[in-house]
Image (cartoon, rainbow, N blue to C red; front, side, top):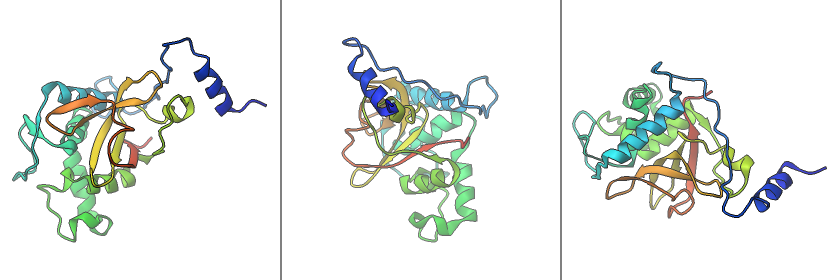
Length: 209
């Protein structure tokens, strides 16, 4: 019997030269803002809009929580993209922290709504609790593995280069997706899912379905 992995390898090795690996998009049943576009598609659109605006990277504390539109950090790409899908990430995170402070070690027992939703460790806890946690392995050329990496998914990276990004709908020829993120000097779409200088700590899909 030929295994699924064996079939993937056969298909990958026997693609015509230069042909891109085809990875199907998952069917997302949720459309929070009822605009006829699924949540995952909306999240990608929102992240790409952020890249088009090119806010420059600036890490600062803002009364009220929100930076101006022309600046931000990696976490700002996420809440702005989710806003385009109809989700207020600040409200969701603040509520979860308020109701479950012990789950969020980063706040040290002192929630601060002005910054909590813009901290990567807090978002890891939130998405782990409220989304679907998926594989952290990335296998170029492996259809089964790469199908789990869908446009609109969220990926986080460890220290010393702590980071968060959104998976793009753009892929390399071997099927590995690009990421939409802000690592400076502005928000961008780059081929850094595997080359980011810290290991992947989380891979999430929100909303859960």
